[in-house]
Length: 507
Ligand code: FAD
Ligand code: DLZ
Ligand code: SF4
Image 1 (tube, rainbow, N blue to C red):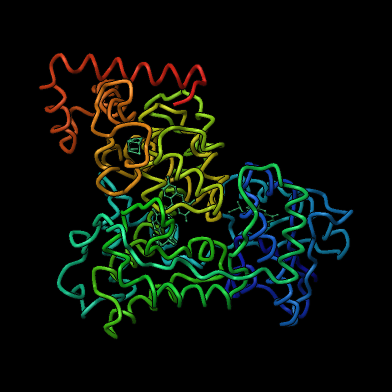
Image 2 (cartoon, helix red, strand yellow):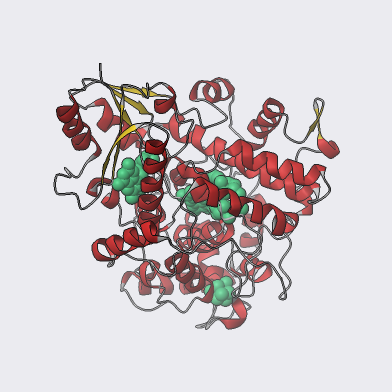
């Protein structure tokens, strides 16, 4: 009996579970570019083009390997516009009465498949290191979940950077040696670029016509769109940037958008790369003396630690996670998140880069755009939709815990034990943005004072009842309490800025 085998746009791996369980001789693979997936948020055009080009090439590869594939292009006349619609259409055509699928990375699509009129068997996504059951058993008896303990388990499980049962070099975590501000003359050349081939160019034309009005530039398009290219991009990173990854992991420079970051999250998240090949390449660079331990450890931690941990949290917390809002923040997302039209040089640089590249690195996402939204009390659901739309690597299972949890503290401390907030001083220390800014980072409360300075103290004041007893925040409140008369000036300046945001005036 014919069965359909669903392969979604972020499931482009040879070893994806639905394909593993299918029979090449009889089953029919279904892949579909559909309006529903392309528009549940206004995705960046580069993200859509990346997905469609990678999907088309993956479908060709499956076909070349002997699979029967029914591929729907966005502009195919019979396109029903949804994944379930396409499954029903293909079931009609083939007589299939059952679908094999790999569990999607979003509750929305999981429940759509559950409600599909023909039975859909959703297999666990085996491309991750930690299964839902394993995360649950790790988390079940703990009063508080912390990534560091989870990470150590994953190091033991994989044997990555281990000397027997001890961590290489004697320590689990080398962050102490990392996170230096970048010197101005930093020499990294950035990620590997790939010129679009004919097939990718065809997709670019389609996306320009259909999604050209979405936020984000389509050109220049330089992403890898197949496994071979993605592996070249990985090798390029390991050779050129990994050695300094740790040192400058948190640095930001106006003239260098990628620094020593890998820029591989989009490839990893859609399945063009796997966590194991990436981490083994980094561990091998350490073993052969090509990368120091602080770099290899810091990098591997992001992947088998943070990435797996975030996925565990998303699935453990359930479908309501994206609606959490424990701080009761209700302000609308400022329009400059979509236009970069702001006097704050750091926010302008992060949004412009996001518009141009569908990429910003972790500290820009966390300490610039995320920090500002949190300090300004923006509705976390709107912040979540923005992040889900604008980054090429954004899929809800990884984006939501980073935004709702880590960045906006809207989950009340499931992901982080305290909010990631800072005034302008942190940004000044870690970047060169402030020297080109209309605001003055040294000015705390004047008309041209850096908005992060007053919004920071106003945030702490507003949420005193929740945070004053947090031992990691006690020092901040002691400093605030010693400010005496200056407190009023901070609060007035913050009120003025928030009123300008509400009146949609320039900030
Ligand atoms: P590098 O800095 O070179 O790190 C290497 C790899 O580690 C990344 O490719 C990624 O796979 C993994 N990684 C690092 N940090 C995290 C993390 N916190 N969570 C999960 N994986 C991590 N990452 C996404 O993949 N998709 C998202 O939608 C996403 N949204 C984010 C939103 C916010 C507000 C924040 C603060 C972080 C978000 N991240 C997201 C995590 C991180 O910023 C990106 O993974 C990283 O910037 C990708 O760029 P890179 O490949 O150059 O990463
Ligand atoms: C993000 C995305 C987009 C833009 N388009 C498609 C599509 O047309 N077809 C498809 O199968 N997948 C697409 N995706 C990825 C899905 O939205 C993704 O599989 C779910 O959000 C689960 O992670
Ligand atoms: Fe950003 Fe403030 Fe520095 Fe301007 S002065 S770049 S707003 S931190």
